[in-house]
Image (cartoon, rainbow, N blue to C red):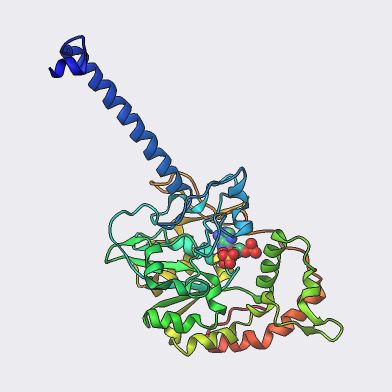
Length: 361
Ligand SMILES: Nc1ncnc2c1ncn2[C@@H]1O[C@H](COP(=O)(O)OS(=O)(=O)O)[C@@H](OP(=O)(O)O)[C@H]1O
C-alpha cells in the first residue's frame, strides 16, 4: 500500500536510494557551508553587538563609517566604531579575539576607557583586545551618557562573553566629560578601573574640529569658533572642542567617586612613539600579564602610525582606519599660541593632580 502512494513504479532500487541520499547530503552540506561563510564574514568584518540589527551597507559605506560615526540603522544604541581598513593594511579589528569567543558569560565591564575624545582611545582598545585575557566591545555603547535609561541588563547584553579569568572592557570617550558618568559608574561597581587617554588639548581640539569638518564642511573656521572675542583674546570655553581639553576640571568630578590610583592615564603622544611601553603600563594597571610587547608593533610608514604586526593567527598587519590619523586643518599659528596660553594653567593643574608631566608646551 505504502509503495503505491510513494511511487507507482514500485519500491525504489537500493542504488537509486543511495544516490538520492548522497545528493541530499551534498546539497545540505553546501547550504551549511554558504551559511557559515556568510556569518563568518560578518563577524570578521566588523563588530556587531548581539541583538543589534544587521544593516545593509551601501557601496563605500565601510570607508565612510568612521567619518560619520553614526550607525546607519539608527540610534539610540551603541555607536559602531570598529575602524575600516587603512589601505593597504586590513582593518584592525579583523583578527582580534573579542568577536570570536563563544564560551563564557556576558559580564558588566570591570574596566572602561572613559576618554578623551580624539586622545587615541581606539588605538588603546584595539591594542589591548589582542591580549588573551581581555575581551572588549568593539562599538561604543554610550551607556553612561546616552543610554543609561536602558538599564544594566541591556548594557550587559552588549558585552562579549568572558571566562572568569578574562577582563571585560568597553570604551566610550564621551564619558570623561559627562557629569553623571562617575556616579553612574561608581553605582555599577566602585572597583571599576578607569583608563583615560590624554593628548595635548590644542592638538586634540584641532583633531576634533577636523573630524567635525569632514562631516559638516560648512561650519565656521576653527579660528572663528575658538573665540568669544578674538581681539580681546577671549577663548570660548563653552565650545565642545575647547571644553573637552580642560582635563583638570573634568577630573575633579571623577575624583569625587574614585581614588586616583583607580584611574590610569595614557599619554596619547607616547602611545604613538612607544606603543609597547604605554601598553605595558596599561596591562600592569589592568593586572594582566605583559603579553603585548615590542614584537606586536611596527611603524607603518604609509600610515604614519604604529600598527599591529601580523601574527600566526592573522597573517596580515593591522592598522587603524582612515579616520584615525587624519591630516589636520591648518590653523593660524597665532591662534595656536593663544590656545597654548589658555590651556597652560589647566595643564599645570592637571599634571599636579595626576603626578605626571605630559609636556604639552
Ligand atoms: N596607532 C595609531 N593609529 C592611528 N591613530 C592613532 C594611533 N595611535 C594614536 N592615534 C591617534 O588616535 C587619534 C584618534 O583618537 P580616538 O581613537 O580617541 O578618536 S575617537 O574619539 O574615538 O573618535 C588620532 O587622531 P588624529 O591624528 O587627529 O586623527 C591619532 O592621532
